[in-house]
Image 1 (tube, rainbow, N blue to C red):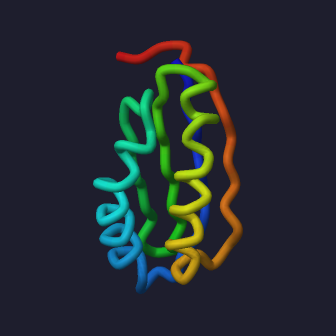
Image 2 (image 1 turned 90 degrees about the horizontal axis):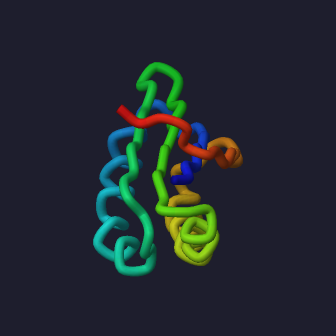
Length: 95
């Protein structure tokens, strides 16, 4: 299993709007993301820091969804105050 952790920052007063926009993307993103097992969106309201953790069947499945990720980032760019960073991980243990 493979995971990706994306980190960015939005204006603190826009964090709920960002979450709403992310939720609206889900119905379109799921069909374009075979192999996506789950996604978790975390936010720190005081600073606007947002962390998105996605779990994939494989690294190849995550790579295949790259066009969907790029489209989502274009749609969310009005919220994004800091360029996103992304780190890829192998899932070693899930409880």
